Length: 425
Ligand SMILES: NC(=O)c1ccc[n+]([C@@H]2O[C@H](COP(=O)([O-])OP(=O)(O)OC[C@H]3O[C@@H](n4cnc5c(N)ncnc54)[C@H](O)[C@@H]3O)[C@@H](O)[C@H]2O)c1
Image (cartoon, rainbow, N blue to C red):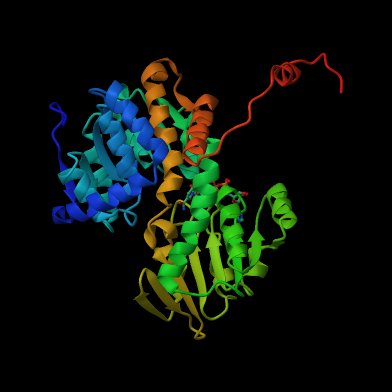
């Protein structure tokens, strides 16, 4: 345990620690790549004495990332990047069983959320891990006295990367941030396979609905939308995609999905899933047409994809939490609309987020990128940067090995052929 940084916390219930520890260890079993990195960190101690503030979903998988960094010697303060995704037992275990400072309580209000971000920043971080850019935002708005001490940071999700690129464009970003979200290994595993499966896990837990034979409308056919649409198809649904980008829409068509605007899809869908990173994707003109019993879930980062305020204002009745993480809004004409996890990230609010084997990739990318930043962070310009390709390939190679797969090797003649322009066909 660090001798220089005190272990503080604001968690819901420390007596949940034993249960949290069990679940953290369970997740760890399915994170073979991160485990290998952790073992190396424990030997080499690259982060000895380095202060890191992390604003991430407080889940068992994040806990394993924290343990890998701690094994490498880091002094850590963790706060939640979303109030609904915090697992109180995980938070308790990190504090009580593993001696890590955590500021996170499930369903904390907005004020509490920002208090937690500020408490994590009190560690005076040299490096930051963010998931949605809120920590970086606080650093640049209300905690500017800490900016000089921050060397660099990593961003985990698409929405955070979008916010950071705007900051960088305006010259407002004061230190280098690495778009860990943009690695191939993260996109493929986390956004696509992770969001695809765990969004349906949330819908099942919340509604226990049968997906086969239903019409599922997926708004956005990016990395996450592809995963959601593929899983919906696999479960036997008819899938409609809504898009604003012609190439993404064409891709959806070529994969056998119907494409139409939400104004048309609204009247025929049974289940609506938003994954656009945009706002007001489902709004009054759509709610007005929806069928009785329509289910709405958002798996985009912020709770602005579904206009929940409109439902709150215009519904005749609200049956709050009529099922686990499911609110029912009864419209004036008697139709009922079901909303999962209050329109927040459904897969984290009503399920456990991605399986550990998915987060193994993102968090191995995070751990190796942080190690790389120790070496190069001070020499990088303020702004948004990509993860070096070697880290991405290294994580993919380690994962393949853990799955028992082997790569083919280039022959010398193939290597020469690929690296030369002189050869004809
Ligand atoms: N739930 C999770 O666990 C999880 C995991 C990763 C990312 N995310 C979040 O999911 C969101 C999407 O991420 P992504 O990686 O798929 O992004 P992406 O940029 O690859 O895809 C978003 C797609 O939405 C489309 N779009 C934008 N506005 C639209 C609109 N009004 N109607 C229809 N389509 C629209 C874009 O054209 C794009 O194709 C982001 O907010 C990201 O942070 C969530």
